[in-house]
Length: 170
Image 1 (spheres, rainbow, N blue to C red):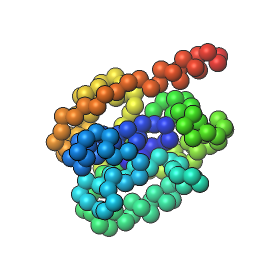
Image 2 (cartoon, one colour):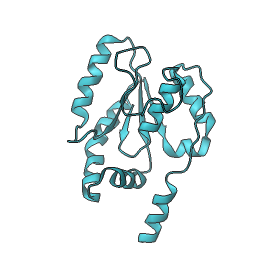
Image 3 (cartoon, rainbow, N blue to C red):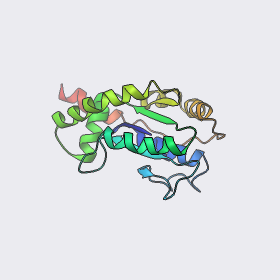
Image 4 (tube, one colour):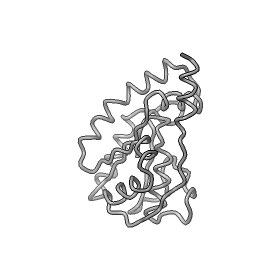
């Protein structure tokens, strides 16, 4: 599970962890890092890029993924996307930094994200598609990965405050 910081990747990590039966209740797993202290069939690894502080980028993530690829027959990926401006403003609000730094991080990770889209086991999750389609979008993702679940978490439009703010700036 990965995406730019502020793209909803932690939320989707929590959803997948619960939908696969790894958690007893939604939110038991924070959505950050690993959902288990030991390797297991439904292990979820979430990394926003960059992740942690000091910042780590895709090089560290690629080596983590390589270990899983050796241990498991199939490794699935979810690449989360969100309107670039909303993602960047969310990142600044939560993690600090300047607009220039946030945009630079976004650009630095984009080539890695583009590589992920070439993998047949990659599902591209769109925050805006989730808002538009609701439950059917979650069910589509579950079918893609062979997850037997009808779980539909409560969702809200987290973009609205950033869109309003941007209109007030102009």
